[in-house]
Length: 596
Image 1 (cartoon, rainbow, N blue to C red):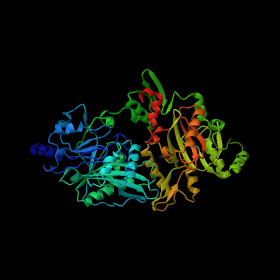
Image 2: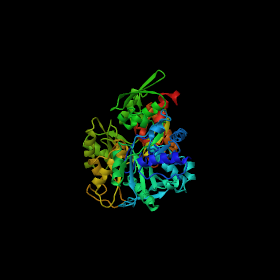
Image 3: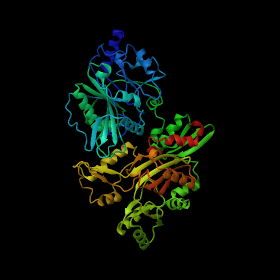
Image 4: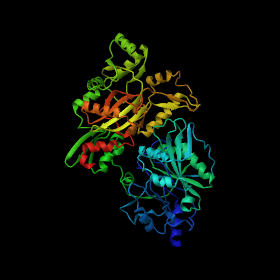
C-alpha cells in the first residue's frame, strides 16, 4: 500500500471520526431496553498509523466491516464495497471524504444516514452488573448462533452465517455476547463487539458495538443495558480507549438509553452498497411507515416481488395489490378471496363453534348469557367459565377463569360494553395455541402467553406493568400494551396481590389471563414441533369455514400432544407476529402464485 495515500486517507478519516450501522433493514428501531437497529462505531481519534493493516476488514457473519483509513484510495474502497455478497450487508467505516468514494460508483453506493455516538472507556461506569434474572456470557455453542438468528429474524436483521461465526468463535477480535434468562434458559438478547486493535491494527485503541437486539417478548427489564455495560467493561479491561455506535436519528428510545449510559454524539460518515436490505435508507419513505405492522409486512413483500401497491387507507390498513392485470384489495391479511359467509362464520363465535362441532372438531361447552339464574346454573355445571362478546376481537371484553357469581355479573357487563350478545363458555385449562393456515396449509404455529412482569424487589406492580407495557408498545409499533383495568386487577387480586404490592426480585407475576397480543401477550414459535393431530385439525377447521387465510385459536396441554379444543377463528390474523415463519410470503403466494 503506498504510504502517502494511506496516511492521507487515514488522517482525513480520523479528523472527522468514526461511524457504522447495524446489519438489519435499518428502518425499524424499537425497545430502549435493547434495539435491534442500534450498533456501532464512531469517535474522533488521532491519525491512524501507516502500520494499520492494508485494506483492513473483518467478516462479522452478516457482512464485512471495512476500515476505511487502511485503504490506499477511495477507488479501492469503492471497488471492495461493490464486491458485497448476496444477502449480506457490508459497511465502510471512518470515511472522512465520502464524496470521493461515492463519486467512484454513485449508482451503487450511498451515504448512510445515522447519528453516531461514542463513550470514552476511561470514564467510570456506574454499574456493570447484569440486571436481575439475566446472565451475560460469550457465544459458546451452535445452538447459541441459532438463537441469535431467531432474534435477528424477529427484528428483520441480516442473519449470521453460522459457519463463519462458528469458525471465529474463539477469536477476540469479535465478541458475540448472549443474554440468557436465568429461570428459563432462553436466549433473550445479543450484542456484538469489535476490537479495532485486533481486527484492524488500530493503534488508537478503538472498539465498537453492533447488532444490539433484545427479544421483544421478554418479560425481563434491562437486557439491552446489561449487554452494553458488559461490552463497556470488557473493552475497558483490555485497555481500549472508546466504544462507538450508530443509531437511526428517529430512534428516540435507543438514543435515550445511550445518553443514560454516557454516550455523546459526534460527526462521522459511513458508506454502504445499495441493496434490498438497505433500500429504506437510500430510497426514502415507501409509505409503509404510515401502515400498522400487519399491513406493512405484506406491502413490503409485495413490493419486493415487483407487485404494484396502492395504499387506499393507511389508518385502516387497506391497500390494493396489482400484478399482470389482476388486482386484489386487502385489509392486512384479509383479502377479497375470503367470502362473506366465511367472514360471518368467523366473526360470530357462536357460529364458529357450531360449524366446527358439525365437522367433528373438539370445542368447549357454550351458551348465550341469559338470566342470572341460567348464568349461575351454567357456572355451577362448568366450575369455571370464560365470558366473551359473541362478536369481538383483540381480546376486548373477555374475562377468563371466572369462578363465582359476583365476578360473573361484572364480566358479563364488561363484555356487553363491547356491544352485541355475550357468550358463556366452559373454561378449558391449557396453553393458548395460535395456528395460521394459508391456502389450507399450516404456515405458522405459536404458543401465546399472557402478560406477566418480573419483580426487582423495589418496584410496585403498577409501575412494573407500566414499564413493561411501554417496552411491549415500543417493540410492536404500539400494537401491544397491558391495560390497567378491572381484568388486570382481578388477575392480580387472585394471587393475593394489589397494584401497590412489591414483588420479590425475580418473582414472576402474571397480570392477565388472556394471551392476546393487544393486551400484552407474547408469541413463541412452535411450528416445527406441532403435533400432526393439531396440524390436521387446523386444516380441517379452515376447510369447514371455507376460508383461505385464518388464525385458529386452540387450547392444548402442550403443542406436541394431540389433545385440544378449538375456541375461535380469526379471519384477519396478524401475520407480523410469527417470525421467523414466512407468513407474508405465503400470503402473497396465495394471491399471486406466479410471483413465488
